[in-house]
Length: 428
Ligand code: SDX
Picture 1: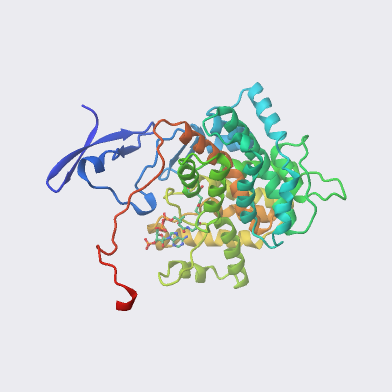
Picture 2: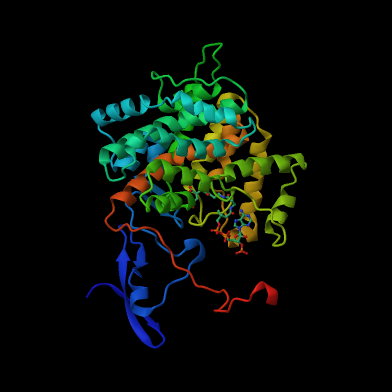
């Protein structure tokens, strides 16, 4: 007898098939519920609703586990590189020597963007937020690549993947150069992925620039930590947009917009601004913890809390150590690190945070590292997007290739007016 759950509604009994994941997760298949019972389910924010079966990333919020295609995030951070992890997420396996060489070759040789794209930049104010530039340019890139829109042609999908992975660092660095009024620095094919990005960000045409290998390695590790996170808000957006068979550029551009929100990828920028606010206010951490707990106060402790992690975010644990290492390498004493550590210490002892299971998340420490590396705060969400790109691509590809996929179209419970007759203006 197949695994079934029973639902009793208005005295009638319905059987719901039970699905079980490879890590023991249990789901109720309600795909025939409305046809059988006329009822739908309601779950604002989808905290209890699985949107898909996926073989890419496994999270266990209670145990603080994060694995990409079965590999522990801690092992990948220690032994792998961001580009290799991108291959793992997108193609389902760590690349062989030959595959690795080919993968690097393709991505290195697609890193330039069409010169015409710079004209977009000229039209925008220098103060434009780089996430606005990133989402616009990712979408605009597709205007040059109408040859690769067919989402069911593996060759066209493959070259779109190469182009996006290769060009995002260039677009991100150009967005920064635009904001500081400096000339764009072209990618250099002799450099690795993350090194190339750091050089495009911080080099000047007037002199040679040597990337600090320790910083390049630290940033590469941070990008690995951000690479995927199953069905988070921006990834669900990429899947939703892609479910209409929109091309990969359009789907990723939508993901960038969703990530920008301060509750999601924009939180790393908010964390830094929050720490600076607390520091300016004499480091009065208790005051801000009290504000975060006050129901009538909109203030939130950015960098705390997570929909899935109700114990600790394994990425925050790694980033906390990385922050110390980077600051030590750079010989930087950032008072914000002390404020962050004091905030974490107080919050983790406070009953409100304990009861609501609010722990530091991936965004809590990343901003301190980015600031020490010289990135302006507005660039922090862009760095998150760079890291998350392979995850968005992998999830979009899995969705497009899955025979289960249908266009995303949720239902609703209508709570508005019942039918009423039109009243002409003369009678209103
Ligand atoms: C990311 O989904 C992912 O995987 C996302 C991400 C990824 O890799 O893709 O991990 C990246 O987005 C990390 C989260 C970054 N956001 C922040 O740091 C913003 C601050 N955190 C929150 O706004 C909140 O914790 C969320 C948005 C992260 C999670 O929201 P939920 O799951 O909807 O939880 P909730 O807002 O319902 O909070 C539960 C309770 C509420 O109190 P009650 O209504 O039950 O009384 O906890 C409170 C909230 O008010 N709460 C906080 C808080 N976070 C939640 N109170 C103070 N400070 C906070 N940070």
